[in-house]
Image (tube, rainbow, N blue to C red; front, side):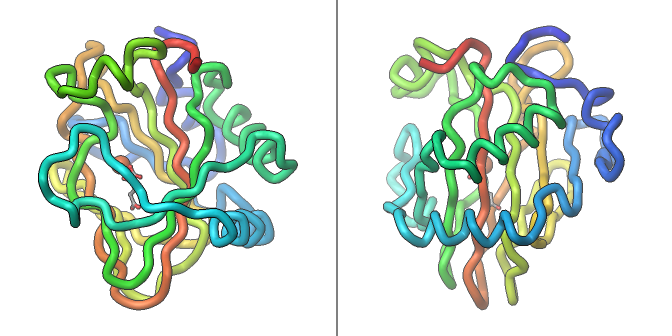
Length: 210
Ligand SMILES: O=C(O)CCC(=O)C(=O)O
Ligand SMILES: [Fe+2]
């Protein structure tokens, strides 16, 4: 493995249920039923309890770019430790390279417009976000519920849309095999049309986090 903050396609595909999206443009996977429904319900309750408006790095003047709410999940909670253990068993990434897991909540009409999860090296906030731990390597995202309508995640460049479903994981490498950042990972958390959408986001870094 290139870096303890990364996983590999082979590592992920060794687990039953993991599927790779057939595209040469990005390393992108999903796994239905990664988390059991009971765990998803516990995580949803935590997110509902303690949420704040979501933020973005390098504000771009569009105050409707990311309209959801975010919850920082306390690492000492048993359900969060369980989540981290399941992620480690799947991806083998050194937990020291992980940002603290977060929850995201989208009410009707809320979305996260097309973006990449890595930080732009030219961005004004790059030093602030990346000086210690480096850029983001892999993204692991888990839908915690079925959404009545809307709320899919669209990867326009690779022409793939994921529908939310309780416990389904989607993950991708934010870099290309040659180590350069991969703009084909552009993705859009589309507007929720009916219902509420909850997801977990877990990002990993090139170097240990803080
Ligand atoms: O909610 C989604 O579908 C995407 C979330 C996302 O892209 C993010 O939190 O970075
Ligand atoms: Fe994202």
